[in-house]
Image (cartoon, rainbow, N blue to C red; front, side, top):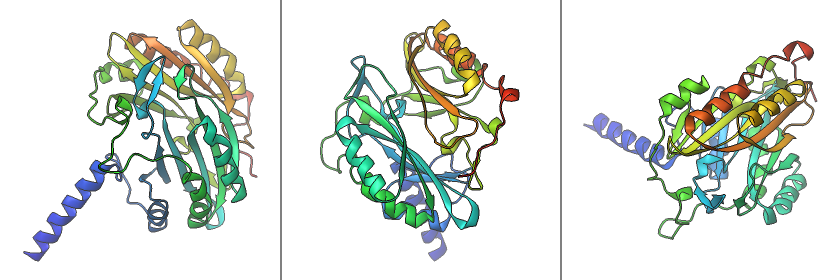
Length: 318
C-alpha cells in the first residue's frame, strides 16, 4: 500500500509540474543535480536535452501586438538562457532576453556589473507594440556561479501575474488558444518537423554542419545556433516570424530568396561574438496562406550549406 501511495503521489506531482511548464513534454534526459540547483535558485522553469539546460524567460506578462493583432508569447517573445558543459568542469552560457526599451540599459548594467557579457542588441519585429528589443548574453564559469551573476538581471524582467490576479486579456497569456493550422502540411513543405505550443507551430533547424565549439562546449541548436519559423493563425491567412542563421557568403542568396518569396526582412545582425567563421542572423516576417509562408522558409533553408567550402567551419577559442 505504501508503494502504491508513493507512486500515485509521484505521478500527481509529475503531472502538476508538466502542466505548469516546469517539465518539457519532449524532455528526454533527467536534469543533472547542478542544473536543478540553478533552476531552483533562479525560480524559473527549464528542461535538459542534447546536453543543454534551457532556462525559460517568457514574456507572457505583457500583451504584444504585431500590426495591431495580438500575438501569443510562443510566436517570438520567449526569452531564454542556456548552459552546457565546456572544458575544465565549467559551463558556457548563452541567452536571448526579451526586453521593453526602458529595460534595456538597466538589464545590461546588471549583466556587466556581475561579470557577464551583452553580445548583441536588436529588434526582431516591425510594427510591434510595445516596442521590444532582444539582448544576447554570454558567460563562462561554474553553473551556480553563473546563476548568481545572472539573477540580478533576470529580477528586472517581468514575470506572469501571480495566481488570483488579472493578466493581459490576449492570446499572449491565453493557454486555451487552440491550434488552427495544418501542422503536418507545414512540416512537409518545410522539410522539418516542429513543435506545437498553444496556437503556435514552431520549426527549429540547427546548424550542426558548422561544428561550432567554444571552450570545449558544442554550440548546438539549443544554444541558439539555429534557424526557425513560428506560424500562427489559420491555413488561409497566417503569420510567420523567424530567424535564419547564415555564413557571410550565404547572406545575399538568402536575402534574395526571402524577398522573392514575399517575406519581409526586419533585421540582419550577429548574436555571438568571437565566431570564426562569422555567423549572421536574419529575422523575417510575413503574412498570407500558410503553405506559401512555409515554402518561403524552406527556400531560405535550401540556400544554407552551399558556402561551406568557402570558410573554415570551426569556432575559435576565446
